[in-house]
Length: 397
Image (tube, rainbow, N blue to C red; front, side, top):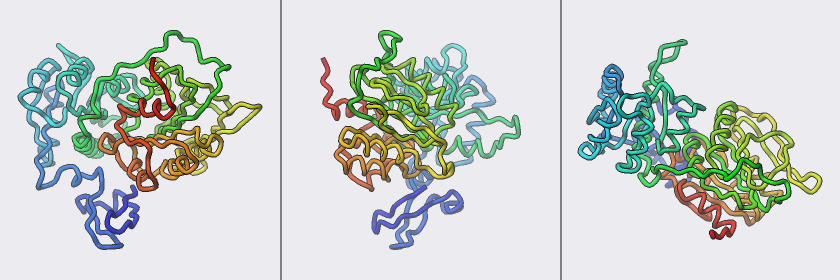
């Protein structure tokens, strides 16, 4: 993680080891100010702050008891209630007013996804899905994020030698981070569907490229953007998402079913089509080239798999080829990938859109991009699709 001191501008490359035993704080080497690291426990809840109020919703009494014990040993989270099914949870919400909800999927009376829809309509509350089904790349996980969940995690398991202590640490972290996401980022989304399964015509020329970059927290942000994009814009959308290639492929298939535009995996030397969104993994370097009067993509394994730079690579390539016809979008994530690319897009006359930091699950990428240069639009992920249409001059009928 990279953070900057607001007093003197000194850059700090912070690792988890550096923070060990420091309660999420460090001293600036430049001016000796005390810095609080975004996303650390101390930046979310501290001794002077009220504890985070948590409602646990799970049909297993053993799971509820285990989760309660976990948070009772932490001190920054107060378990204010438990529910064995969705109906009980909805009845408790008006009086308990929790800051965060952990929600199972498989429950009697009312299942988790149905409960989540009701929560987002009646009592919008940051919700973390906590189920044996909510693993990365699973349809149930994408459904939950589309319905408004902030994050997801698997229930702890000792199978296959899994580190239960590490799983418990992640549970604590995810709940605390979810509590810090602004309420405006939470909404039940209605997806757009194509009127037919006909793919975009090769005859429609691309008039611009939209490059979207995301890492941690990116699934939820993209689910609020891609399904809301209209199919009649002569734009090509390209997404770099820091996730395993297999999960990116599953996500592309899911978005394709739930979006008005076509969504597919990015493939080497494939020509670009308007009205299509191409997804690539952060472990791939994607660039654009002109061939026989048309644009195509080059997709190759990243030469530096441990160093994040795929978003910058694609943004720099698009800005060189299309200049002012390029729109760059920086979304939730860790690190600073996208900052250099977004600054270059703006320099050549393109448009830069950034997700409002308060609506990000992780703010580092957006904060780094904001420090690197100005943005034309800073808005919540729910408003980014409209910002893209505005930037292109799209007029609704």
